[in-house]
Amino acid sequence: MVIDMQDLKNKTKEAVIQIAKWQVGVVESPPNSNLQKYGEAYGLNGYAWCVMFVWWCFREAGFNLRKTASCTQLANAYKSAGQLVTKDFKPGDIAMYDFTGKKSKTEHCGIITEVGKGYIISVEGNTSNTNNANGGEVMERKRELKFVTCACRPMYNM
Image 1 (spheres, rainbow, N blue to C red):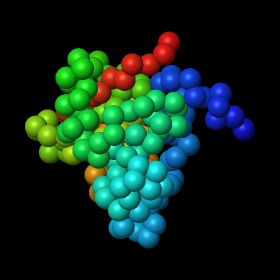
Image 2 (image 1 turned 90 degrees about the vertical axis):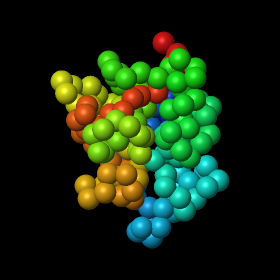
Image 3 (image 1 turned 135 degrees about the horizontal axis):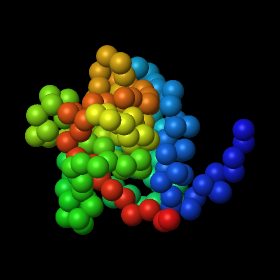
């Protein structure tokens, strides 16, 4: 199926989610380098890139997401704007994770695509089955809610 990217650039959560899903399978190259197209587009290649992946997906969907390479800074910006949630997560939210389960920090992020009972499914950059927060791949991951610290809720067009 071929979809014109211009048709998706209308600032909807559906566009963000579709763009993120299209990226599943992208890997950094060479392995363990943090070098990939999201960091290159962002202007900070070679660093941990989960937030840069999220920024890239939103940019491709026509958004001007706050430019930061820090999960904590992104969450704080959304908190200041009154757009940070700690429950009732929705597809299109940007999930923040603390893999210790203590919910005391934000060490990784991803775009929520589905919400279930006790879990979310998200598309995340720089993850893998062996390293949740610096794994070098774009993957769709199922995460228990105990690891979700909070979520940033962007203002989407309806």
